[in-house]
Every structure is written in structure tokens, then in C-alpha cells.
Image 1 (cartoon, helix red, strand yellow):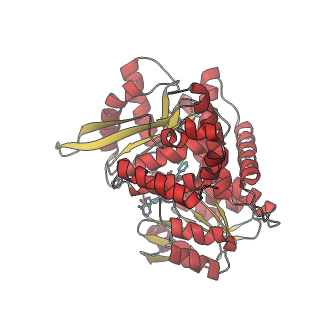
Image 2 (image 1 turned 120 degrees about the horizontal axis):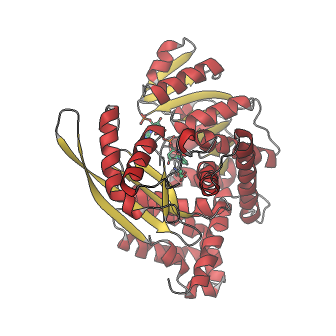
Image 3 (image 1 turned 90 degrees about the vertical axis):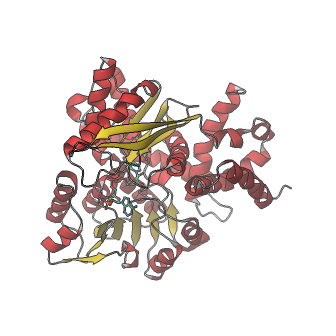
Length: 450
Ligand code: NDP
Ligand code: 2IT
């Protein structure tokens, strides 16, 4: 029998050599390869067709300069990318991220993960990711507009409703999608469903804003039910206070859970008695409309305490839902969560848990579900937005929400089916990776040497 860890080491040595310094990309690949190697070793056709080598090499990466003018009249230059990772099962689909930390490694890890996530949704979408090291923080609306218009002046020729359909991610929300879409139409002189997350007035889908957070909570409920638990009454520690965190918090409250933290890159707001509806609306307005800091939330309410520089993970909670960024939950946090009695971790963000922390959870200590399953609701509703655009109609909130809920249940079912261990437990990481992999791998097998 071939030794899996020897094969894994061999594969990863080659991948690291081909992708030096790209540590986030290496991390994302290693986790997937660990899950799917037993399958590729068992099935000679996958090995003969070089499936793993092909699935870990992006189809192409487009790198370009974005020149824009700031409010003082200075010209500025940023770097932008579109990583078109894999379109075996549908046109490229995935978000755009604007954050100073963005680099090729981060976008390759995100595009790679997206391929598996999109496969899990059951919708015909390939994987991609893009973005720029542009920092929107502190920039005026006009500066952001000029940046978005300049970025689209290059990107428009690489995308299309049957080619590549970008959407939002960190730092890219309603405002940015509108600027990008406006410029696309100006350049191409036609309306096309070429971005998702659009405003509902111009082809956006109901529930797309809420979809990632709502979907994460639907998945979490499924996972708890499977384990004989329920969400109602549970204390939920959420990190972040952006799109995913906000709507995860809202849905969790609606389902009777108690949200005890929200955070941003400055620190964490601890809400011992649980977030109230009024407080949630304050944070929504603070973050979505005023682009303010979470510290202001604690200043406003006596029952909320802000701790600068602190993460949420030291709090007593039943469930942790990291919804901010990659590698934000480390081994020491995992140990603390376990010690404080947490029973489940659901990743709202992409790869928020370090490999060491994830191994700790998966060692049977805490239920652990990976981002590519938990946060797939966002891209799933993006897929539904695409369908509505293609049919020139729009569905009601109820209809989209019902479909989202159904898709999250199906994704959970796939994780259970592929992730059940010999001991009867469920390894959601293996389940998501294997289920996501099979569909793409089989498509590639059929295509021959492409
Ligand atoms: P937003 O930009 O709306 O919010 C991001 C939140 O995370 C903010 O609170 C931000 O704080 C915090 N954050 C970002 N970077 C860091 C950092 N380096 N350190 C600490 N805090 C940080 O983004 P989203 O909510 O859309 O995305 C959050 C996560 O969810 C990402 O991993 C994204 O890839 C993932 N995701 C998003 C989807 C979507 O539909 N939007 C779909 C699926 C996954 P601050 O304002 O201080 O920077
Ligand atoms: O990480 C993600 O799944 C997203 N940022 C959403 C992508 C999309 O195309 O809606």
C-alpha cells in the first residue's frame, strides 16, 4: 500500500518549489490534497490524468496596474489581479478583494478554495478570485469610484457573463460593485449580468447581501442537529463586523442564539448579555453606511465592552464563527475555546483557522466545519442572481431564501456522505474537500488533455 504521508510530502515539495513564498496558497492546497490523496491513489485514472497537478495550477492569472487620481490630484498606482483558477464545471466565478494585504498568494488560495466551494453548491460555476492591494479605508467615495473605474477599464476585456463573473469580498460591497458595473456598461455598451451582488434596482438578487451570513447559520444548524444539538439558546462568538459577520449575527439572533462578540481589526466588542436587535441595527448602520469602527459600538452601549487588540476567542461561548479573514484563529485560541466549553466552530470567512488549530478541532475535540462549505451561501445566491439575469426576471426574497436554505442543507448532506469516518463521526473538512473535488476531477477526466 502506498503511504499517504510520503505521497503528500512528495506532492507538496513539488508544489512549494513551483510556488515559492506563496504560503497561503500552499496551506490551502495541502489541506485539500491531504483529504483527496486516498482517492487519487485508489483510482489510477486520476493519477494517469495528472488531476491533482492540473487542479492546483490556475488556468491563468491576469496581473495589471491600476492608475487613479486621489482627491489631492496625485496619481497613484496599485496592482490588481484576476486569478482564473478553474472553469471545468462552469464560467469562472468568485469575488474581488480590496485590502492592503492582497497579493498573489492570497488570491491563488482564494481562487483554489472557490473552485471546490462552487462545485459543492451544485451550480455550474468554476473558481476564480481577484482584487487589489488598494486600501479603501479612509478614501472618499470619489477616490473609490475613480479606482473602480480604472480597474474595470482593464478587467472588462477578461470577464463576461459566460466567461468570468466577479462579485464582492473584503472591501468590495454594494458601492464598489455599482462603480464597477457602471464602468463595464460604459465600455461595452450593453447590459450584461457580468457581476453579482448588484443593487436590486439593476439586476441584483434579493438576499445576496445576507446570503453568506444566513447560509453559514443554516449550515451551523444542520451540523448541530446532526450531532443531536440545537442552535437555540447557544452563545455564539463572531469575529468581524462586515458583510458576513453582520448577517450571520442577524440570522443567529432570529434563530434564538445569543451573539456575544463582534470585532474589527482594532479589537473586539464583548456583549455579555447577547446582541439585541437595536444594537444590531446600530452596528449595521455604523459599518455599512458610516464605515465606522467597532469601538464606537461599545462607546454607545453600557452593556458592551471594547477590548483593543483582542480577538473574540477568549470568551465563554458554545459556538465560534470566525467571519473576518484568513488565519485569524490560531492554536492557542482553539485551546482556549475548547477549555471554555465550545462545541462547534463554523468558518464564515475563507480559511480563518490555522492548520494547527484546525487539526486540534478535528482531533475529535470540537465539531469543525470549513469555510468552503459553511460560507458557500454567498456564491450560491450569486449563482441564482446569474440565473435570474439570464431569464430576465427576479425572484422574491422568500423564494431565494428558501433556495439558499435548500442548497446549504444539500452541502451539509454531501459533507456527511463523504466525510463519515470508520468510527461514525463526520470529518467536515474531508467531506467538503472530497465532494467538491470529485465533480471537478471527473469533468477534467472527460475533457482529456486540457
Ligand atoms: P467585509 O469587508 O465586509 O468585512 C471584513 C471584516 O473583517 C471587517 O470587520 C474587517 O475589519 C475584518 N478584517 C478584514 N481583514 C482583517 C484583518 N487582516 N485582521 C482583522 N480583521 C480583519 O468582508 P466580508 O464580510 O465580505 O468577508 C469576510 C470574510 O468572509 C472573508 O474571508 C471573505 O473572503 C469571506 N467571504 C465573503 C463572502 C461574501 O459574500 N462577502 C462570501 C464567502 C466568504 P476592518 O474593517 O477593521 O478591516
Ligand atoms: O468567497 C466567496 O465565496 C465570495 N466572496 C463570494 C463570491 C461570489 O461570486 O459571490
